Length: 354
Image (cartoon, rainbow, N blue to C red; front, side, top):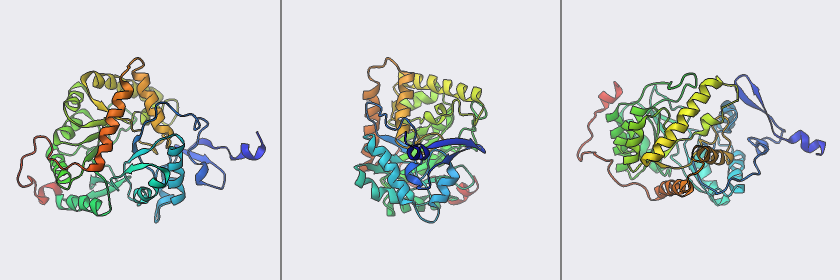
């Protein structure tokens, strides 16, 4: 290999608990690549959960690159990674830097159908600032929903729980939103004609989100048979983003024994969910740590195939789940399951004090 080419090959080194890039000065075009980039998994799926502004290696670098103004070169690089793999559908998970708004305008140049919530919505003081905007009262939440509509968003993303702490099996950060509050949030979004993507972890939190009428559940870690049965009985699609855990095995950032136990639990729940009839779709949380754009959904499919090596209907059913999400282009003008007609049940003061 010529020396100049060798010098410019992408290298990733572990440093200060972050994957830092050792890349050529030309910058964004080299970022996030691996030696397996040229390998395309068959069949081709869409990416049902991505964060275009993130780079899979260093969150702080991603933020600094996009603060003040979206990095258009990076957005084009990301869509190039999807295009070269034949990926023509990407559903965004949101950001508060305007990146997804810029990406929505650029995506058609790459032949990509791109759906975006513009930003995630979370309750002030809870998890979500990394990808969204917060509310303190239900009036503020309603205004954020209407802002998504004004800015051309395709659906609403809500955050009902924190994330895995990666230190313990079953450990989650923060607290879950009350079920009644979730129900009202979904009701408001549906009344505005939006489907609802729900960032949710933990068995009871998944039950609460599904019974509130969310249209998809993202992540859904640490579930049990009851919550998976609730998902199976609903019309919601489950996007488990399993490679956010699987790709950490052997990385060294967290205790590998804990990560392996979490991964084993995820595999078991995937199998239980499939037996019960849960509707899955592939989304990798592309851009998250060690989950690269384009490659992420390929990794996600390999993880599913690992869990279901002899399932002849797996590809068909995963594509059906993706197709249901693609239908969000038409909006979701419906009431959540079990929601009563009439006025909202909470006032602003009660939500503010929760």
